[in-house]
Image (cartoon, rainbow, N blue to C red):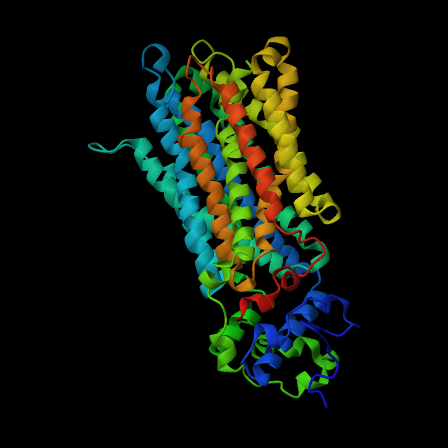
Length: 562
């Protein structure tokens, strides 16, 4: 008589009971995935598969999950504010430190310092995504998640008080150092938030919840120029009589960035890792069960079959409480072994290259909104306008562009991602962006000459399809298509590739903007962006569609073993 009578055995496939539709994650049979392994180890593996499938059925959106989703959403609002406020701050620093310069240098931060302070957070993010993502897989998502916020709060406050030393480095170098450290803290939010939200969500709403959390970034994009506008208006009379009052303004703008983090720190410290992650962690290390938080999570990790309760296959319940055979744990693939196979490496390359390609354009434009606003003639005159008037116009320009394109794009994705699918939205976004950047690049002068309104419309449309497209999906997909043991690490690698793209854009491509005259190379820059969008479109075909599939089914957990 079979020890597992309720599991239907077919050649090469084991399936969980038909009466549990969400238990349909497919695993290879023991002959193909566990040759030489013990029967007890096989049954432990099946128990975990069944328990995880049951877990996906039982998770519901409740008040506790709403609080966690809000905390995660505020994290992205905060991150976006901290990253993009520098766009306005860099402009203000020109008035503060170069108001007495002569000629074209007046009221303008030199390009080398402008680049340095704008690229700082991206460098820190790249490092944080790699390091904190890996730590999230090793010691727990929420522990590292809380630590990343504390780093961000401390370094934001330090950035607001940055100043030149009497001898040695100037304020821009000091600001660069603190913002690299700030970026390190921000970097952890990407892989850890993605892993936390995906592992807590049900299959049918996982994409919507992940996209919804990430969509708070759009609010941060608007909040940065909005706060800058309010603070500038409050100081307007004093600024116009003494431009050095702007020294207060830029410090307040940066300092406000710590408020959302401080407001949510308590709840982030109270977060616990999902049962899915604790189950997997305990399967690899039986002693891990001793360190789990709540009693129900401890029970799940110690006995993966507990989630199945009375519905569990009888043959598996007889084995309850028996630890997995050491040979099973010994045959778990390492990160290098798992991604050493082309079918898995191809997915990681697809998510990484797509994110890299997107961020070349996304950060190339969003960190330099003032350049675009100036190019279309909305910014005013840097030399003849009052400082407060010039800054206010630029703040308004940033707000308008974000409200017209960026914010709606995020939320269109939230409400369509479960119907259209992640891969479909990403392919569509890259395709539309390729076309729009070709039009904007090759007809740049003609469009501006005829109508700046037409240029704003096309540019806002590009912003819309960045977010109703790859900006959201490049975040969502890596949180779903990798095994739980490697999820934060692989997501961190993908996100770090994106930040490398931002560094390439800001440190390389944007330095070419003024070749041949002020803003003379913007048309060629847009053409380069079109090329990167096409690259993103192509590599998206390497990525599987994750819509409507459980995390275990997408990754096929049996592939983690020899």
